[in-house]
Amino acid sequence: MHELSLCDDLLGQIVAIAAQHNTQSVESITLQIGALSGIEPSLLESAFSLIKVGTVAERANLIMQTSPVIVVCRMCGAQSEVAANRLLCDACQSHETDLLCGDELILASVALNCAD
Image (cartoon, rainbow, N blue to C red; front, top):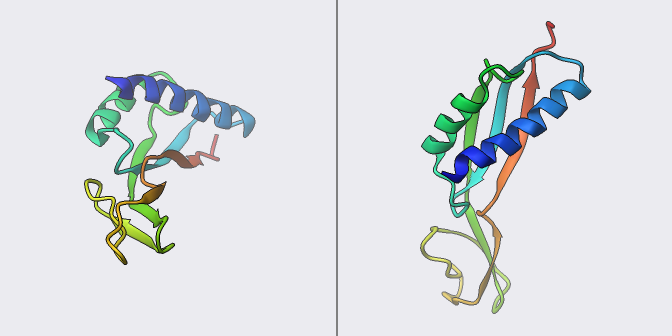
């Protein structure tokens, strides 16, 4: 389960952010997860709930937002939001496309508890 390893790395970033802002707890964490990232959100949530115990993120809510798959066509230059299993240009139907987004895992925001 590579989600556990991802959560370990994520928690390291969150702990560093909390320390940088001198806070003892985190309210929420927002992630953007691309449809082609290979991450299973339910497994990520389970792994995070295990790994956050005893840390500044112990009570944090994990918010996951799905990012669309967007390609740019090498033939006509159009950008298209496409299905994860169909990376064709919507404008000209070319298969010669480059992925602009959809395979990412981004730590979008961390809400710190300022009442500490």
